[in-house]
Image (tube, rainbow, N blue to C red; front, side):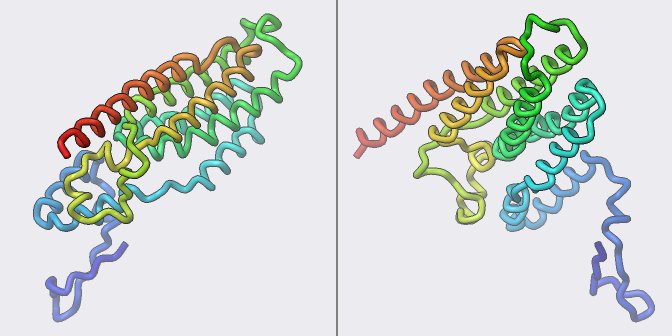
Length: 243
């Protein structure tokens, strides 16, 4: 990326700055500090930054990567190892309270892993080869996936559908006053119910092959659903009482 600064003159010519080359030695902490300093100098740019942060991830490339792992793997353990960076990426989004992007990856990733497992272990049961390397690798993979689902669910906040904040349509004032969780970790009750249905379906399909899986994530989701929906109803009741 070339940046032309008209204020920087050298021998009556404009000096070109290669930002890619200039920023490449900086660590993540350095870049975060730089962004904070720039935003403090030009606070109006926070809106553009928030909209950039909410840019949807390229799901097409994610699905292509998943399919490539499934197609090209040599052994089940080696394929399971290849899935781990994608799971870590989901966890990174959840740690940043950006569960919307975490779910965008988790849904196709888990779905493809379940389909692949059902094909690879067809006609087998958990009693057949419980201690073999393939079974251990698959159990490890789905344990990581379950933990990632639970982390994404735990960092989300359930909101009334009518009160969802869209980064792309919200006003500048809304974007500046909303919390990061309100912007990037919103989840409607319908969306959470859909996640519970998915997890329950996968649990039923996988349990005969690798044992109980996704039980903790399902319990966590149902607990959040009860707790957050109750809080929403209380908040709405309190507002009606004030009117």
